[in-house]
Image 1 (cartoon, rainbow, N blue to C red):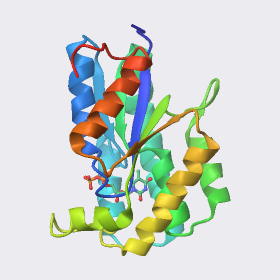
Image 2: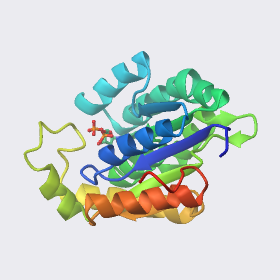
Image 3: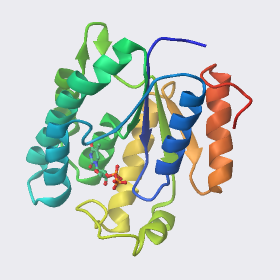
Length: 215
Ligand code: TYD
């Protein structure tokens, strides 16, 4: 089993069902003696969590939104993600930059070139651009996700968007996955939770990251 750090992000539209699987993977890695850093974006540090509150609840223009998200990402990378990877932890991150391209870029229609510039500054690393080793993408029809989310809680600025917005977000994820197919693991979120978990677990066993025994 490898002891170098692993950076895994989880993506999908709101309601696609990633949370329970992130918790399941954290438990599975810990059961094998790995140190796990469980974190999320926007957020993951005291400063980035403050920025998250603003991004999710305060009205702002698209450039401000993108700048705050990348500012939060910079703080998170420097203070949590990079140190954890240097220690050899498994970093499980609920959303990362693909979400910015999907939500701000594709969903809001914000300039992808500006996002690429911000990505290259914020994620600059000694050997290139810091990206997750693997991105698990829970793909789900936005109409099904909307039914799942209905009445679940008070919606934030993104959850309150119409299905048409999430269709664009979903298309944005598809484009990112196409552009970097090696990094993405696509799971069909319309399956039962158990079936999604089995597929995810099996994928990580095949990579040599989890043992086949405890599913
Ligand atoms: P989410 O990850 O769904 O957390 P929770 O389950 O607690 O609601 O919420 C984060 C929201 O932020 C989600 O609607 C997507 C949005 N978001 C962006 O718009 N851009 C980004 O770059 C990131 C990381 C998230």
